[in-house]
Length: 188
Image 1 (cartoon, rainbow, N blue to C red):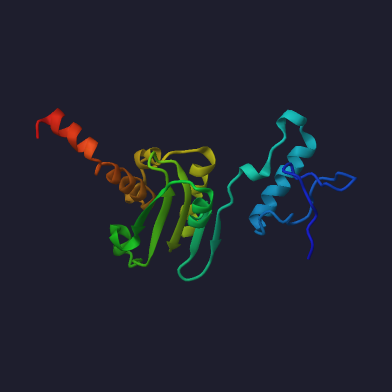
Image 2 (image 1 turned 90 degrees about the vertical axis):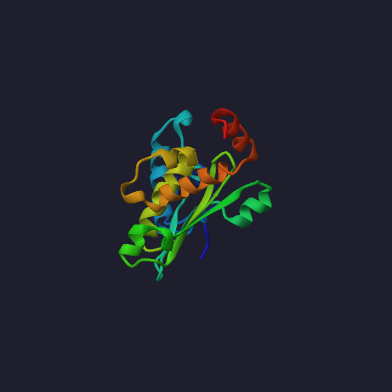
């Protein structure tokens, strides 16, 4: 199986310069990614230069429908380490979440890779509902939404996504500088 070479606007690099109409151009071998690339190619075929889109600026979430399902979006640990990006990992277990316990769905976790300031680099979710939950994280990464915003978004039933934001903020509270400031402000 070969791939036709495309540029970032999904325009063919062949002499004819035809827009990409094939299922996959080799960037992401997922049907939903191919559908999105086709949509970008169609829009780029109709739009003038300043309005053309680069399909690589869109994140591609994925899910493997195993038991439990596994979903991810954004950069992996290895990609972050290879890029020299400093990050921390926030790990939230399903078993610590009341609704999951009540519904007997205790297997799984949400793992967020983010900067200390809350920039989200990547997310992995293992467990029931991961295919639905990963989409919120994909939008957050694509639009540059900070973990602080995830934490402050009201979720129904204390959703695991919000729990990851809460955990990130609680890690900030362990700062000796913040402890010193609170002691001075509240005379503790």
